[in-house]
Length: 589
Image (cartoon, rainbow, N blue to C red; front, side, top):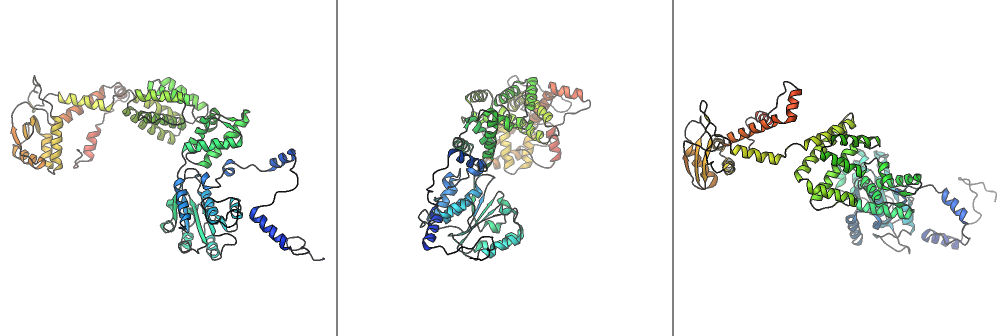
């Protein structure tokens, strides 16, 4: 025929296809092309053809194709399976979670599950799509005409949403459902969300919406209320390490278990991040010539501190070896380890020791490290570890914001080392209480202080303080203040109180004390006042303890050195400053 070519430059066919040809084409589109009768290409040709294929990164090559391959999302899979079995499918799903946990992959799997027709073409929605039928293959390859994926980061306006609204009126071309997958949906503008609300609330029965976002809090409440929400969890490091091991086996790459554990920890619960690091680690191992991913190579690639050096640094920190500590920091910094990573490794080791004290060993650590951690867990007290953690955490914040992170890290670690020489707060409080109990009885102005009795009165300060607290809690604030500041207890028994007054108090509060104790305890008390020796009032004991503490602090060599270096410096009384700032408020508990 002399007809001219058509619009795409092809010559028109001479005759229409026959019925047999049409049937064969339909079978091919449904079940795939038949096996070729031609012999297989020679090995060299196959190798050259494989080499011509572009490389696909591991994160794309091993994207989950079934729900069973989805890591760590069992609750969501079970919910979807039950919804499909009971035919209770929502019209809109929202997948949210951190990066790389499978939000977009889950959306595609849901699209396959809803549109799968089975190998025989007669199947319905299923939680286990076959992956062989035309809808499954087309959706996996991203070319299905009824599964529309839109990136909301680049399609944010009302015009983009208007196209969706106009298209949902038409039925699906070849699939059971027309599915719209909108990634990073939180990037849509406010007007775009408003334009989508009506369609999202009452879509046609053949339309499903699948949203994915990392920031669900940015979505309007009106959108959240119209979707069935699934919060995808972070994937545990154990699952990620096992997953990476299977991928290395499939790729024919040898990898150390410690190296895979380090990659899984660096991924922070994200499969995509971990696979990207694994891809880089495999390339790094190939450059080394051995073709094996080792822990040393991964540590060097990620800029992590060596585990042995971490333990040496922590030991120098606890042992007060300042010179060794600074040498280790300089050595790690010269190797490329950031000061922030050093602080973080010290914090991780402190946490590991604290957890080991509770009998919970960490996974993925060597036997040598576990032995050292157990030794430190037995020699350090929980109070020391918690104080160490607070100092390291403060130092981490300082290093992160300092203009010179290396100097800040050194100063922070030296401060932690010197803080180990300070007395334990609990022991210091106990010692101060003992000193307060043995303090001499205060005398009035102009009088000589009274020496303690040969046989001191039995200590009743704790019981008396508890009784004062009960009176205060009953709402009798004035009487509780008198009991705290002016009453010296001589003897305290059940419903019996013998006391003396601090010189200077006007009047006799015995009747008021008797009434206050009755209201606070519900029992009648016998209250007697004497003139003689008694224990110091609670206010006097607190002042004596404060003076003792101040004297002990001033006698400390570090404080003496600081006062000598800065003439005119004063030691501030923090409690006094707080009392002045909070004048008129009752801070006693």
